[in-house]
Length: 117
Image (cartoon, rainbow, N blue to C red; front, side, top):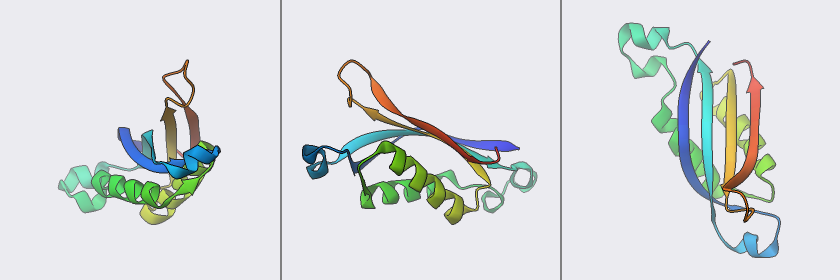
């Protein structure tokens, strides 16, 4: 299976378990690997035969803007389910990082795999 990559996508969302975090928007950084067969698109040079990463990025930004989760884990799980359903993605790997959440670390986060890569 081939993979479409989206690396270093930044979105803003309400995320966090502390009261002060519930009143601000914070930046998350996302990396995705999306399972697909690119051969039909490559054969015809046709975007309609592959995953449209621009449309996927727009969908992620909209999801983040509308979300208000406490945990990065919940954000990742719900986003993965949303993308798989909306775009017919058979499998994905998603890494979500929350920069600055721990002073001694550049970022903290989670990485999940759902479906078949």
